Structure formats: C-alpha cells, structure tokens
Length: 202
Image 1 (cartoon, rainbow, N blue to C red):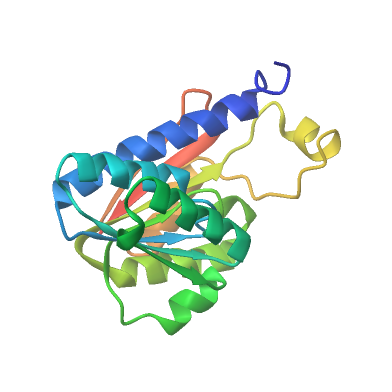
Image 2: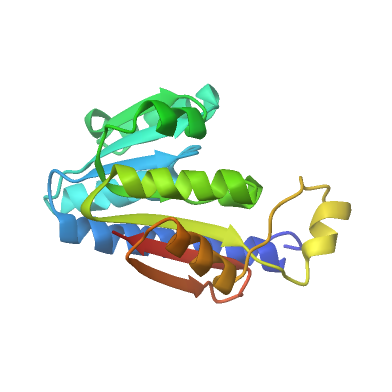
C-alpha cells in the first residue's frame, strides 16, 4: 500500500492510461493497415492491449517492437499471442539508436517511445526524435513521455536507489520536439504533474 501510494507510482499508472488513450485514438483514426514502431518496447503492454481492442473493432494494425532486452521481447510476444494478435507483431532485439540508424528507409504511421526518454541525454534524445520524425509517413505521429521534476525526486534516487534520469518540463519537451522538425506539437502533463506527455505530428 505504501509503494502503490507514492506519487511516482500513481504517475506511472497515469502515464500507462494516457498512452493507451492516445494510441487508441490515433490508430483508430489511421484504420486498418496502420504501422507502429515502438522503441524501447519492453513488454509493450499498453500498445498490445490497444491493438487487441482495435482488433475487436475490426481494425488490424501491425507493430514492430524494438528493445535491447530479448527477455522483455519474449514476454511481449507471449502477451501478443495470448491476446490473439501475435501475427501482427514483429520483434527486433537491438539498441534503438542503432535500429534507427540502420532503418532510415522504413516508414511508419506511428512511433511510440514511452519510458526511455528519461534516460537519454539531450544529444541522443534529439537525434532519436529527429530520426523518428524522418521515418514517419505523412500525417504520422510520435508519442513520447518524459519525467519532470517532482517532490519525490530525491527519495527516488537515494532511498529507492533508482538510476539517474534526465528531468524535463513541458517547455523543454516542446523545444526538443520543435527542433526535431515536428510541424505540430502537443505537450501536456499527467494529473500528478510528474510526467510530461508529448505528441509530435509531421
């Protein structure tokens, strides 16, 4: 009860719900045949559950999940199979930066990276956003998020011993996305104000 009641834990749950909501709306508008690239996918629960919901609506979309951890991708593939969308998912075990460098010619309707920007320095994040914009089809969207400064910051890194992170506010997120060349940028915060959610459109 103590851990679940922490501000950061509530914020992560909010981020999960917001990500699913944005994905659902975006992909529903794209319709069947839409393609998604998820960077640092992990187990990809939010995206896969959204894809399963869309399938119930009669909308079939395809996803490429990229992550450096094969264990997480195996779990994602198992979840996709369980949800009945295994044939709509491709997994790639690779560092996201290397993947983007080697696959600049590929195109996607949506690029989603939620949970990794916190750990990328300014130079790396700017590069990832620029290339993500490049691989988007016309009318495509990048969905991303970043932790911002919050009252539990010191507790997280001292008591919990969480790795160092890069904290960015809404203004900073807007600047990075705009510099990456996105024509439209929509940045908001989750209800706890811990996470900044950004959507960039080309």
